[in-house]
Image 1: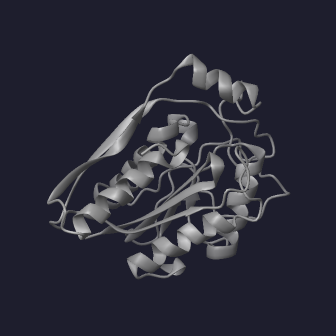
Image 2 (image 1 turned 90 degrees about the horizontal axis):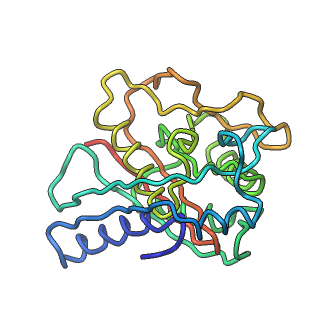
Length: 240
């Protein structure tokens, strides 16, 4: 599966479909991506790469930091400490390298994931944002999150910590959600590392300050992946 930034999130959705259809008892899924000059040069040509640490949703944001990494999961029919309880996919095909500014495709993927999970937006305790720190992505994503969740759902982009690992990003961010749900006795929320200077042009969303803890134990987390070409994916994880 190769759909740019949503690749490994879509691979996890595909694994869940195989399990649900009875075509497999266990599936190894996830993603890996490594740095290469061709990819870095392509993003540089688009003017998308920042010389500073990426700064999602800041008035001073100037683009992405390309990273590399991998995250893999063994998904089975048996119940574990965390399960992928909902997923959604969409293709808005608005532009090859820019999201639909209204976020219609992104919202459709999120609503589909919530519906499959059988929960409402209010049941999500944490959102891992796609949060690339590009002007268009952050504007679209903030609008969608504010429209669907208001300004009260704790949210963060973890890309300032990992870089944008491209095809592996969805799986890495799914792993962060998994850890927040399963191995988090202190109920700490994944932090949003930035300069704290909110862009006044963006809708207000609840960005997690470092060290913040959830008011109640997390039950559900949402991970969002929005790729070039309008290839969107959303994953809902639930604690057992």
